[in-house]
Length: 308
Image (cartoon, rainbow, N blue to C red):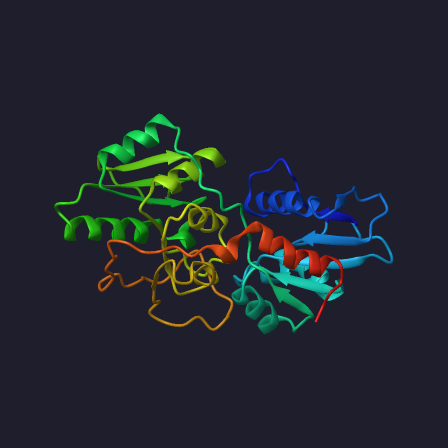
């Protein structure tokens, strides 16, 4: 079967492009051939919005990872996404949160919810710095993002400091991965390491005891998928779609108020109450729903037009 992935750069490490690469690799095992926009194909899958128009007669699908929902961006940045949403034959949402959001502001469309997936094979820790951290600390916490207000680095840090204060006999550290951390404190056991390779990210998740991802109204963050793939439990907030991929594999911190899908300045999240959060000493990670082969099976049905 010939498919065109539109608006995808297989050389990019961004969330949508990383997932597209994993998905394409799994679909190739099922006999898929990925072709260019000017070639003959049966199905056109637009990631968010297309970079070219679909060929007449082709099945037209949209893989939607959320819409812009601040008042200043809603009508301008969503223009191409809305056109795709209205004109495609079928929508694949990352999470139920994303489906609820688009249906609330626009209208319901034929489609299904399929979370991102990943290879669940354990990564070997070969990096000397990560090995040194693992040997030096009893508990390793990690967080990762391209940092801005919505991602709540300040709350992530506060939870780590709370754990450290409540467990004085436990030697612990926090590793902050990603660019432009917007909240930093000088402490010898908090490490700001900037952008690192995908392979090192997986090694860090493999070494860590907990990932903290208290972002407000996040959609389906690939960093959380990656952490869970390495059996690293996750602390997340109850808002957005992250809790749908974490499920029982971590701690879900309740927000002070439930979000009603209104347009809002998501870069200025409300305070989150960490007072009663207690992390268990161990937790079992169940990540089977994130297996890229299972996810690819569901995409296979959707791309072939096996729609309910």
